[in-house]
Length: 575
Ligand code: ARG
Image 1 (cartoon, rainbow, N blue to C red):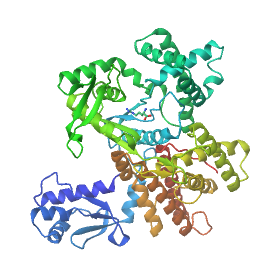
Image 2 (cartoon, rainbow, N blue to C red; image 1 turned 135 degrees about the vertical axis):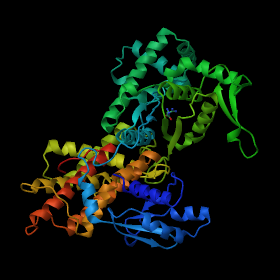
Image 3 (spheres, protein in one colour; image 1 turned 90 degrees about the vertical axis):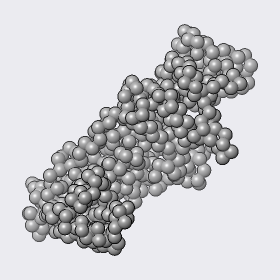
Image 4 (spheres, rainbow, N blue to C red; image 1 turned 180 degrees about the horizontal axis):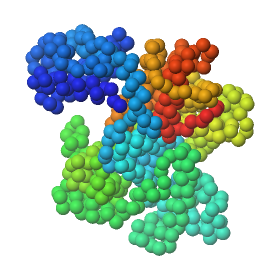
């Protein structure tokens, strides 16, 4: 159910009757103020201007042709040519009751093949907070796309290739020679392992030489190095998988298509670019000069695809990945979630991949950048001693802090239930805090605000959900519906419930989960106002009214649960 589209369709038909082309698409938006009704057709003015017509006159011509009697109690022209629509409460009730239980009336509004490239940690180190945003935002986008009806192809483009692996496997070799068991200490803390290897690389000339030789050997397929490398990668991946599990993120081993998976294709990509006249050799390196991204002086942007000495780069791998995704996976759309420092890289990748035909013309390419996560002091998020914060530590702290907050709120929960609630609240709080910010800006990470029961937070929404469940539990022999929407709070709540699809369409189009966060927060707030103004279980409420209000409670609960699930956040019956 999409009221906005429905009104736009009717407006389109009316315009057609006035001689406008059939594909005229007049803008419709939710009204900014209640005295403008619930929706506004605001595209008439632009259309009139284009035709040199008086906008108000066009609106007046249109009005009698707009067949909105079924849904509108009143339609009126305002200002220079806005058309305000006041919906009938009976119509809202009917639409809402017509929504099915599993999709809550949301149609399958997209049927594309969508590659979602997210998380992609570098396996040389353990996942740190720098990977949180990509993992969480990307996962929400993938869930929304799946729900919308797309075929979603998750791609975890992990960094498992590059020069650091030389020192890591040399160090691993030594550790194994000393009898250290791979499952044990050495790799239980990858950060430490990396630091040790790096220190030896800097301090011991022999070790550094061996590390360099191992990089070359690895790239030439040396079996000994490949085995060590694989052991290291497996271990690092198991750390990442732990994090995914804790975050309830839908990335599985089968979604990993690592940088190294493209190795065989890299020489071919460079050769092709040269043949096509796109890449040239310059001082031993091979690069593409991109005029479209020239600087102010007119110097084209250099995009290196092969280094002096023959090595390939992150860039080359991404070009190969474009080819795979666009041609073999037949993607209609590829969405990348990385921090905004990679903006230029992805512009370069798209331009070159298109020119080279690695990207088919009908594959959309979208880089969705996000800003940094900052500490409360506005500086990059670090541990007290200035180190990078490991994701597992961050999640531990979230759950511990949530346990305190939950214990204060509800001391009666048993230990087991408490632990479960704390886990859902802690992880949910971290995710919601991140998802609810406009992703393009940096945001301040604050434990106190994300774990608060007030404001737009996961605990607030989870609490709203569990409160609704408690109302439903307390109702004796509950009857649900039919709906009667007499009070303004009931009407506003009903309208909000019907707007889920509208919001999801937008989230899906712009990959902006924060819009869904806002929606859920507003929905919960409207529910609280409704619950205050409209008694449900109180003595004296007629059975019919109670049945209608219980229906609204249940539907709000279902909508909160579905919306939070699309964000990857769990709810609970009690908290
Ligand atoms: N490994 C990269 C990083 O840590 C992210 C990979 C993003 N995906 C891609 N196709 N380049 O920044």
